[in-house]
Image 1 (tube, rainbow, N blue to C red):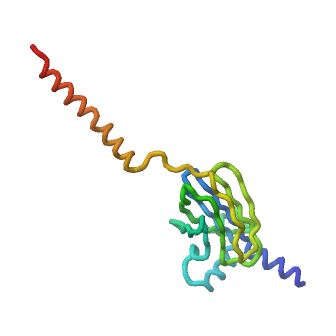
Image 2 (image 1 turned 180 degrees about the vertical axis):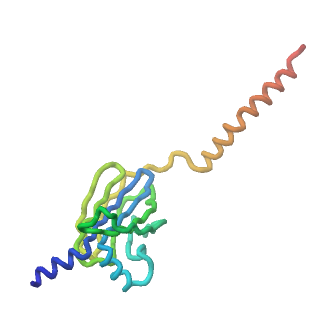
Image 3 (image 1 turned 90 degrees about the horizontal axis):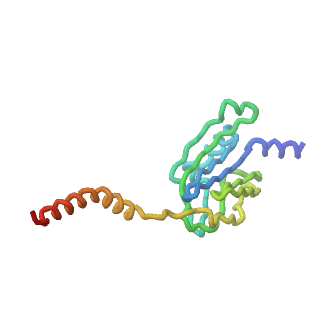
Length: 176
Protein backbone atom coordinates (compact mmCIF):
# COMPACT_ATOMS: atom_id res chain seq x y z
CA UNK A 1 0.00 0.00 0.00
CA UNK A 2 2.85 2.35 0.78
CA UNK A 3 4.33 1.91 -2.71
CA UNK A 4 0.92 2.50 -4.31
CA UNK A 5 0.47 5.70 -2.29
CA UNK A 6 3.86 7.01 -3.45
CA UNK A 7 3.08 6.20 -7.09
CA UNK A 8 -0.25 7.96 -6.80
CA UNK A 9 1.37 11.05 -5.27
CA UNK A 10 3.75 11.25 -8.22
CA UNK A 11 0.86 10.92 -10.65
CA UNK A 12 -0.86 13.90 -9.02
CA UNK A 13 1.89 16.35 -9.99
CA UNK A 14 2.61 15.10 -13.54
CA UNK A 15 5.27 17.78 -13.84
CA UNK A 16 6.96 18.31 -17.19
CA UNK A 17 9.17 21.24 -18.12
CA UNK A 18 10.17 22.31 -21.63
CA UNK A 19 12.62 25.15 -22.20
CA UNK A 20 12.96 26.12 -25.88
CA UNK A 21 15.46 28.70 -27.18
CA UNK A 22 15.59 30.81 -30.32
CA UNK A 23 18.81 32.06 -31.96
CA UNK A 24 18.33 35.58 -30.58
CA UNK A 25 18.39 34.29 -26.99
CA UNK A 26 14.65 34.46 -26.46
CA UNK A 27 13.06 31.52 -24.69
CA UNK A 28 9.68 29.93 -24.10
CA UNK A 29 9.41 27.94 -20.89
CA UNK A 30 6.39 25.64 -20.48
CA UNK A 31 5.85 24.23 -16.99
CA UNK A 32 3.06 21.63 -17.02
CA UNK A 33 1.28 20.20 -13.99
CA UNK A 34 -2.00 18.61 -13.06
CA UNK A 35 -4.32 21.66 -12.78
CA UNK A 36 -6.07 20.53 -9.59
CA UNK A 37 -2.80 19.75 -7.85
CA UNK A 38 -1.28 23.04 -9.02
CA UNK A 39 -4.23 25.11 -7.79
CA UNK A 40 -3.99 23.60 -4.31
CA UNK A 41 -0.22 23.99 -4.25
CA UNK A 42 -0.27 27.64 -5.35
CA UNK A 43 -2.81 28.53 -2.65
CA UNK A 44 -0.20 27.77 0.00
CA UNK A 45 2.40 30.19 -1.45
CA UNK A 46 2.09 33.97 -1.76
CA UNK A 47 3.21 35.68 -4.96
CA UNK A 48 3.01 34.77 -8.60
CA UNK A 49 3.86 31.51 -10.30
CA UNK A 50 7.02 33.11 -11.72
CA UNK A 51 8.31 33.52 -8.16
CA UNK A 52 8.48 29.72 -7.87
CA UNK A 53 10.80 29.39 -10.89
CA UNK A 54 14.48 30.36 -11.01
CA UNK A 55 16.60 30.55 -14.16
CA UNK A 56 20.17 31.09 -12.91
CA UNK A 57 22.36 32.11 -15.87
CA UNK A 58 26.08 32.68 -15.41
CA UNK A 59 25.59 33.57 -11.76
CA UNK A 60 22.62 35.92 -12.27
CA UNK A 61 18.88 35.38 -12.24
CA UNK A 62 17.05 35.83 -15.54
CA UNK A 63 13.41 36.74 -14.93
CA UNK A 64 10.70 36.06 -17.50
CA UNK A 65 9.17 39.10 -19.19
CA UNK A 66 5.72 37.49 -19.45
CA UNK A 67 3.76 34.70 -17.77
CA UNK A 68 0.48 33.21 -18.92
CA UNK A 69 -1.57 30.21 -17.83
CA UNK A 70 -2.84 27.82 -20.50
CA UNK A 71 -5.63 25.57 -19.16
CA UNK A 72 -5.78 21.93 -20.23
CA UNK A 73 -6.82 21.37 -23.82
CA UNK A 74 -10.07 19.48 -24.43
CA UNK A 75 -8.03 16.78 -26.16
CA UNK A 76 -6.23 16.08 -22.85
CA UNK A 77 -9.21 14.23 -21.38
CA UNK A 78 -7.16 11.25 -20.15
CA UNK A 79 -4.43 13.17 -18.30
CA UNK A 80 -5.12 16.90 -18.43
CA UNK A 81 -2.27 19.27 -17.60
CA UNK A 82 -2.28 23.02 -17.25
CA UNK A 83 0.73 24.97 -18.44
CA UNK A 84 2.35 28.12 -17.28
CA UNK A 85 4.13 29.66 -20.25
CA UNK A 86 6.95 32.03 -19.41
CA UNK A 87 8.83 34.06 -22.00
CA UNK A 88 12.03 36.02 -21.77
CA UNK A 89 15.55 36.43 -23.12
CA UNK A 90 19.00 35.15 -22.18
CA UNK A 91 22.10 37.26 -22.82
CA UNK A 92 23.68 36.44 -26.20
CA UNK A 93 26.91 35.43 -24.45
CA UNK A 94 25.24 33.11 -21.88
CA UNK A 95 27.21 29.97 -21.00
CA UNK A 96 25.55 28.11 -18.13
CA UNK A 97 22.08 27.60 -16.72
CA UNK A 98 20.89 26.18 -13.44
CA UNK A 99 17.15 25.61 -12.99
CA UNK A 100 14.95 25.45 -9.90
CA UNK A 101 11.18 24.91 -9.58
CA UNK A 102 10.07 25.28 -5.99
CA UNK A 103 6.59 23.76 -6.03
CA UNK A 104 7.23 20.08 -6.72
CA UNK A 105 8.63 17.30 -4.55
CA UNK A 106 8.77 14.40 -7.02
CA UNK A 107 11.33 13.92 -9.80
CA UNK A 108 10.39 15.29 -13.21
CA UNK A 109 11.98 15.72 -16.67
CA UNK A 110 13.42 19.05 -17.79
CA UNK A 111 13.73 19.11 -21.60
CA UNK A 112 15.92 21.81 -23.15
CA UNK A 113 15.58 22.45 -26.89
CA UNK A 114 18.60 24.45 -27.90
CA UNK A 115 18.48 26.92 -30.79
CA UNK A 116 21.15 24.86 -32.57
CA UNK A 117 18.81 21.84 -32.68
CA UNK A 118 20.28 19.79 -29.83
CA UNK A 119 17.87 18.45 -27.23
CA UNK A 120 18.93 17.80 -23.63
CA UNK A 121 16.81 15.99 -21.04
CA UNK A 122 17.69 16.22 -17.36
CA UNK A 123 15.90 14.35 -14.59
CA UNK A 124 15.37 16.85 -11.76
CA UNK A 125 15.03 15.46 -8.25
CA UNK A 126 11.87 17.32 -7.29
CA UNK A 127 12.60 20.22 -4.96
CA UNK A 128 16.24 20.54 -6.07
CA UNK A 129 18.49 22.53 -8.38
CA UNK A 130 19.30 21.12 -11.80
CA UNK A 131 22.87 20.29 -12.62
CA UNK A 132 24.72 22.94 -14.64
CA UNK A 133 23.37 22.96 -18.20
CA UNK A 134 25.54 24.21 -21.08
CA UNK A 135 23.70 26.89 -23.09
CA UNK A 136 26.76 28.38 -24.80
CA UNK A 137 27.30 28.79 -28.52
CA UNK A 138 23.67 28.73 -29.60
CA UNK A 139 22.78 32.42 -29.56
CA UNK A 140 23.66 35.06 -32.13
CA UNK A 141 23.94 38.66 -31.07
CA UNK A 142 22.45 41.32 -33.28
CA UNK A 143 24.83 42.20 -36.09
CA UNK A 144 23.81 45.86 -36.25
CA UNK A 145 22.92 47.98 -33.23
CA UNK A 146 19.61 49.83 -33.09
CA UNK A 147 21.39 53.18 -33.36
CA UNK A 148 23.36 52.08 -36.42
CA UNK A 149 20.23 50.68 -38.06
CA UNK A 150 18.40 53.98 -37.48
CA UNK A 151 21.29 55.97 -38.93
CA UNK A 152 21.45 53.75 -42.01
CA UNK A 153 17.68 54.08 -42.57
CA UNK A 154 17.85 57.87 -42.23
CA UNK A 155 20.75 58.06 -44.68
CA UNK A 156 18.87 55.94 -47.22
CA UNK A 157 15.82 58.18 -46.91
CA UNK A 158 17.88 61.36 -47.33
CA UNK A 159 20.00 60.01 -50.22
CA UNK A 160 17.52 60.94 -53.03
CA UNK A 161 17.24 64.50 -51.72
CA UNK A 162 21.03 64.82 -51.54
CA UNK A 163 21.38 63.57 -55.13
CA UNK A 164 18.75 66.01 -56.36
CA UNK A 165 20.42 68.96 -54.67
CA UNK A 166 23.83 67.92 -56.03
CA UNK A 167 22.56 67.63 -59.61
CA UNK A 168 20.76 71.00 -59.50
CA UNK A 169 23.89 72.70 -58.18
CA UNK A 170 26.00 71.24 -60.98
CA UNK A 171 23.54 72.39 -63.68
CA UNK A 172 23.81 75.97 -62.47
CA UNK A 173 27.58 75.81 -62.52
CA UNK A 174 27.78 74.59 -66.15
CA UNK A 175 28.42 77.40 -68.72
CA UNK A 176 25.66 78.14 -71.22
